Image (cartoon, rainbow, N blue to C red; front, side, top):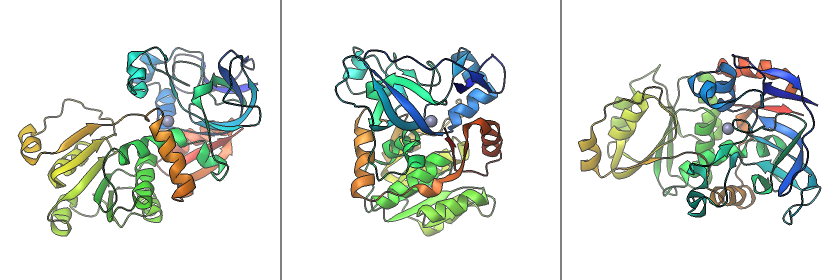
Length: 341
Ligand code: ZN
């Protein structure tokens, strides 16, 4: 079968011929139907400092995908042939105390699908049974494929109160866009977003942002001081930009929360810690999804709260066209790009 892989230690990706993976005890074999391209895949494509240290070619990439179970391994009792499932990318060691404590997503032994082990950007993938999450049939396949990423937003938004809150979300990449839809779904009183790309500003508005502020048009800090003089209840920082972190620390009200998900290119950034202390801010780092609370929350939102994030899927294309997908993402003219298999 054909697979999208990092075939050699250099920039780019290749469509390579690989053997269909064999079923193993405790695993399921999935006929992959949709895959969603993630920023992580772009890092691997670019072969940046992080990915060139972490990924050992040859490696089939892809950690966001969905499909139908076609074979179950020895000892599997929770899944059957025909089940529709979506991938969770954290592959855990079930004996690790970090995992047993509920911190599988940040456990030191956790490996990533499509990064540390072969992933699912190919017609068939074999994954540990716990990584194949049952997905309600009302979820469109393109959306089902990106639940790993959607879960990052669910985790960020739901790590504090949302209903009736005035929330600022900085950066309208896919996770920021998801966060807008989730805040709306959970009854946030007012949702402010920041974004510079007109394309993504349009998506943010479509997903439920009340006000989208562009630094290309106005001084966002001055504007927030005017329209929210008492500050925001929560700021969800998705951009990894110093200017957004400054907005978060300045405009989140005393006692509010600042959730950081965007990764910073420059980590040596001085911040006024006394300001943070005197304001009693709750500053939290967020990564990945809780295993398995986040998945339960996501299923609940789809089935009970009518969460609709279809608008984030802006492109669908055959997986053989992955090069187009990468170039379109680089231009910033896309939400999520979904590959069909
Ligand atoms: Zn991802």
